Amino acid sequence: MRLESPERRRRTAIVRLRRSSQAAIYSSATCLFSGEMLRVCYWEIRPSFVLHRLRIATLFVVVFVFSYLVFDRAFDSGRIRLPEYFVPSTRIFPSSLFDSLPDSADTNLETVLKDASMQDHTVILTTLNEAWADPENSILDLFLESFRIGYQTSKLLNHLVIIALDQKAFMSCKRVHTHCFALITEGADLSREAYFMTPDYLKMMWLRIDFLRSVLEMGYNFLFTDADVMWFRDPFPHFYPNADFQIACDHYSGNSTDVESNHPNGGFSFVRSNVRSIEFYKYWYSSREMYPGLHDQDVLNNIKFDSFLIDIDLQLRFLSTAYFGGFCEPSKDLNKVCTMHANCCVGLGNKVHDLRIMLQDWKNFMALPPSMKISQTLTWSPPDNCTLALRRHFGLSGNGTRVHTV
Image (cartoon, rainbow, N blue to C red; front, top):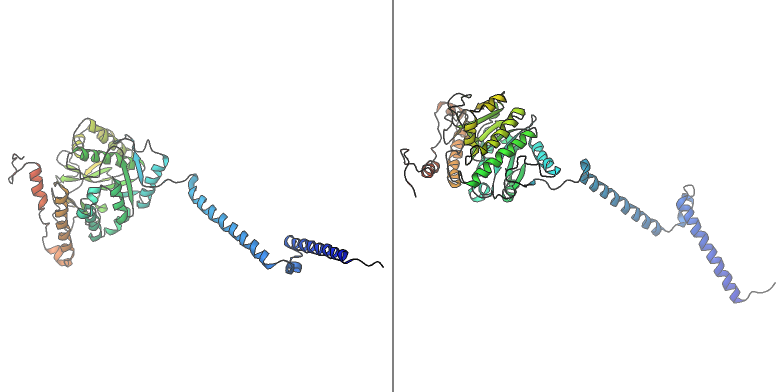
């Protein structure tokens, strides 16, 4: 037998080692892909190799699931939802408020209304601008407080939607309330205090009428209330069941169907969504062109006699000041009052001052024992600042005669 040289033995050992390694690798791969051999040869696989593969697989699953959830929510209903609440309008008084807007605008408003709606598709609406939301002189704070201290009225806050007319008012709303919608109008700055009958005041009033028409067209009944209306009792039991449009009054004649003598106030109205009410709001809005320079309330006083209302068979009713009073004609019985309006008053500061007095009157009444509430004749404190401010605004002396003012 021929002896191998040391060099040849070394090369032979290397070849055998390589073949042994290849066999081990092949065996390990077979273990990975063959279920029958997995238990037999698992010991041949290095533990670190298995852990590495498991980590990669786990990471892949987590990323896939997270991505699926994100995109599934984003594409809900077949489209990505745009940011809610802020809806620009291309015209100050569009004939159809959302005609020029993307589909998401209607969806956003619909979402807010749906969230706040009662079972019968009724919502409570009010408008708010920066001036009325100012923390230093906030009508909004008093308005919300009245719901909280009223008799069984706090639950109605769940159905209140605050329509903000500027961005700051919207942010103020979001800090204190759940249901807020921003109605941002290009070309009009409605953030400042709008004094009675100024151009900004008229813009605000007519924007409100057109917006309310759009709510009716979406199928929602609404109870519109100015933010300077204090809520002390649930008003819904005192509405007429068959009326399409019913409205509070500065002066109430005693007859809910008296078109001639009742003086309606647009700051509080309950409207049911139907063909008649929608046509009425369209007619009301278009009538501003026949009466230029008048606000919505004065135009209503003119068109309430029109045959058009008879032609469409609008059921119109006026609400008694016994339940829905104000500074013009206060509700005389605190056991009946539902709302009180700071009407017949000019100036934000004057309204806030006298409404605080009114809220304190109500708190004093609610603190009385039941027997004293019924037996005593309790009245509101007379409006202090508002009465004086109104006389100055219209140039009236104390006896009601007009005087010259500078």
